[in-house]
Image 1 (tube, helix red, strand yellow):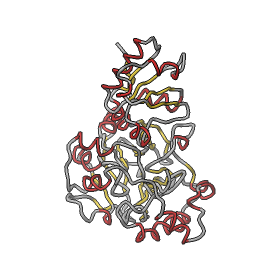
Image 2: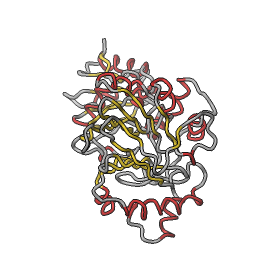
Image 3: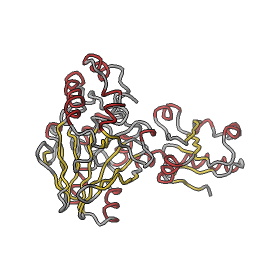
Image 4: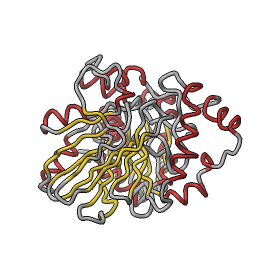
Length: 375
């Protein structure tokens, strides 16, 4: 029997070790999205090219290293792994659940403690580059930009004796399906969404707006909304405990958010520049920026967290150093990366206007996030 390797184990090797991957999906799927990391090497050979044998592959595989075979769902990679094992390849595994499982795995990492008690955690959806957050204090929790895989947060809350009280989306997402509303219903919590992003939603929500602080626990950790449009018309940043700036899809470590996913790039470019160059510039430069996405594994620091001090980003993030308004406008409206897969359907789902089943939701989300102006 060939041993499966779980997405959790793959994540550990991607972040802290070495891994050689034989990806047997179609070439176009591999080119669009694959498992990457500092210690990761991979090659692509479509499954249908290997049906007659794997002999031509053997000299390309490393000796004395683990070899992981990956495909979309699992079946093809298991068959190829068995063929490699029969050919004498040592330490061969297949990706349990395939790339779909890799896309859905959430790794919780502690970011730090809060001044008034409690702490904040980053949930890294490594396979898609999506980041969500859990703020906890005195047995209560708020979750920000919740992913569709609600069980990861529920299990974490149970393990840490937390009651989930608030589910907050910084904006109406276009690259992934939010689990915030459904988890709020299941946990009897409050779902918060910026009003200006909620014009077409079909459900009730609490308005996320300036001056309406959200308190978690008796230590009164305040989550202070800061209206910061640009990526969407309603995008709202969150300042947690005067320590952390949860920037949603407005500002990333290496880039910043694109304004075109609702078809309003020309209309919103001014808002985006004002948020980045004026509103954010007025904030304390000591704030730690915690974004909702990352694009490269190099953005994950030695502690396993995607984060950066706001003052450092003003010095090093090229997106914050475009002096000309015209150059900025061109940067965010021309030559942008491809838009996220099924982003229109994802937006409709997050509005409650369509209700795809679980398999359809998985298929809609497959692939990388593409919320930044650069890949």
